[in-house]
Image (tube, rainbow, N blue to C red; front, side):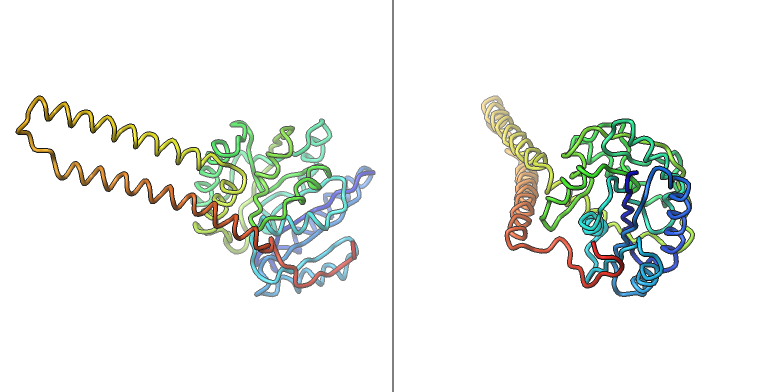
Length: 311
């Protein structure tokens, strides 16, 4: 019998997490002949009473472990913390708001048995807002370009992974975790399985435009050097354009010596090249800054307290 570890990041979910846990319990009861399980709840927002709900659940049920962060570190840091507490042969990650259907976890587990290492849930009809769907679309394009994600692979927050994948992922100790990048650099045996996606019953998404942008930047600067190569290519193109324009100016001067040189076009070229240089320097600075922060051993997350069984 294999053991399944459920890792659920919690963010302002005092009203929903109990129902999600109950659904996990009901789903695994149907699979009790094949799997045992545990649940790790990671509270990423210690400013409300979510951890009190988690504490109560952990006191009632010995297969639940609660982790409380000292401050908000983000969903991916919460997943990484949960991975360190996993003791299962398979780890399943899902959301705390009930939109990811825990009652269909059997589909992910069955697909994983087909010699895949990671299985992501795929939604035919997502119930997220237009803003979140747009963010997911941009994230899909960026991960394909920056991280080499296959075009046909759908990435979501609901996925199952084998133990060796999780063990490899937790070797990453830097303060900018990006779970998708860690998965893609660990294995290529990744599959999708279709599940339903529900409407959010309570509250709103915790992802703002700033958080989504920060998440994308984490992935690209931590797991890809393509932005730097793009900067090099842009520099080369600008240099080539400047060289060709210089030749054009010389030829034009020989053909028509009295033709004005064009102050406005010169200033436009200077502004364009200067802007590109500042942009590329900022990108390089972002890489250097993250290296500096990593060398200073900035924490990936900080755990204030735990509750439930000791692992």
